[in-house]
Length: 68
Image (cartoon, rainbow, N blue to C red; front, side, top):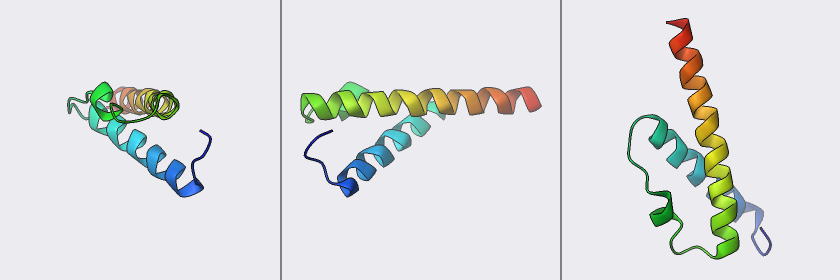
């Protein structure tokens, strides 16, 4: 994302990771509501990071179930 400070990027990334974790734990997450007030560029970037972390959490969960 352009025009974002490193701290702002870290904050957005933290939020994307947090919402993905919530979703993986069974909490409903309306990602469109989360990104509703973001610019188009921010929304696209955020959703890409959310999807990355969501897939990562799903893989970890699947691996944990295989061990059990």
